Length: 243
Image (tube, rainbow, N blue to C red; front, side, top):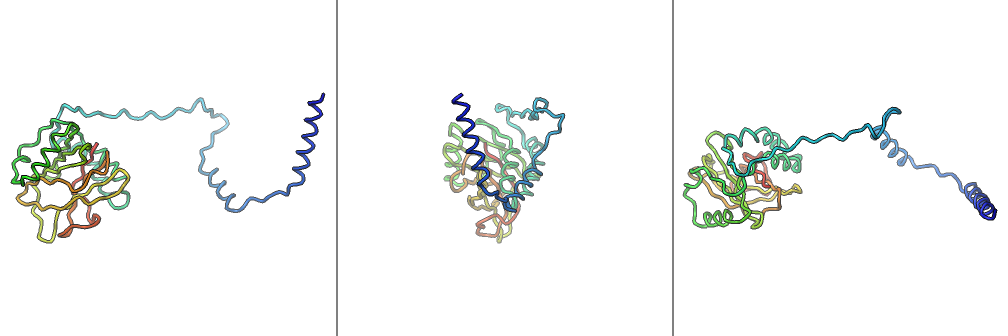
């Protein structure tokens, strides 16, 4: 009985407080926000049940055999379409571009055999020393592929060392007022200049300047004015994703 009397008294107090509070009209901004939220939220019909809703099944990812070294033509076939779409997003959506380029890359882990011509260029001792250091790292990785007809490229990198080296064969000799420029694209979308180089005799071994921004970065090459640019001004002629 005592508990019932206390409950009744509490109800009377609550009713009095509710009657004493003036109604508050919600602001137009709040109304608009709520209506937009309702409009954009999928509504279930009366016959729908949460038990009937099935989550979509993701496509099973295709793995790459780490023991197999794909040929340049195979790499070009598997990655060409995605690379083309990625290049179209170079200026407007760097994050989307980064994801597409990284997804398109074919990764070859350790022990990959380079095409013979990439080892035959007349390169400086310093560049070859850096290449040897990166290749000898326990986590060294390589990606090879065809850029255009007659042009091949290989990226060698080590995440533990934070270094990468680009090897290219069959590069076109650019006019004196143009240069090739390397770029790192970090996983958060930042673009970092990583050095310039010329085609020389068509063969090149180029250690990228600076450290790899992080796992999942992309290396790109553009053609810029002599001396290089602070940011890319042309679409990349080459993109390689790093795992």
